Image (cartoon, rainbow, N blue to C red; front, side, top):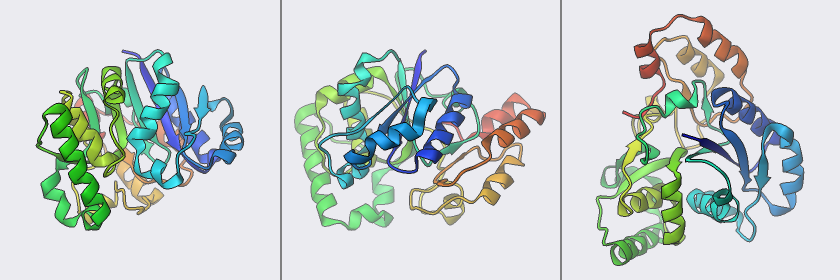
Length: 282
């Protein structure tokens, strides 16, 4: 299976270059590309900052900044239609610039079946809506109602609906072809739209296992999508544990990943402890 890693980024080219180097160590056989979600006038400078760490870095022309933030899946489809469909790969790993992993990607996605769509934090939507900030927005609720109506009309799909968190998508090429052809509208946002369309189009959904609970302060200290930065001290504590976590979000500062990987490689561990430590799909 041929993997392609697509880094989604919008600022801090030095950090993005560091993450690309890390991804090269974690998935040496995978080509690395980037899609830039910042201002269009900054693309050339950002691309120069990435240098040879990436095969290509392209922008998302004609889209507003907030649109690009809300609709990562549609950013991906714009990239796929214009560029990705011409590239050779079987599976695309859509990586966020502030997502830090310290285990091989093959291990992190080891239990994602061929042809399945992997997302992070997969949960029944009804379970998370009462405490999810999106549900407080009238515009979001209208968009979600419209999206469900369209899914029913176009695909005969009426649920069950599930929520997810953005980082760590792993998508088969066949899904990207079908999703692009479905032309999903920019209603609600990516964390509910993509799982709904995957289910409607008949693709199995699996969880990466990297975020193990919603609305849990202890879990948020390791993985969250609420701009609560994960500290180097917390990461070091997890790396010191044979069964500790190996994926963290958000990490928006430089991290000594080479030393961390050397430390992990030098420590004896059993295959079973390796599997349980990564926070992989169950």
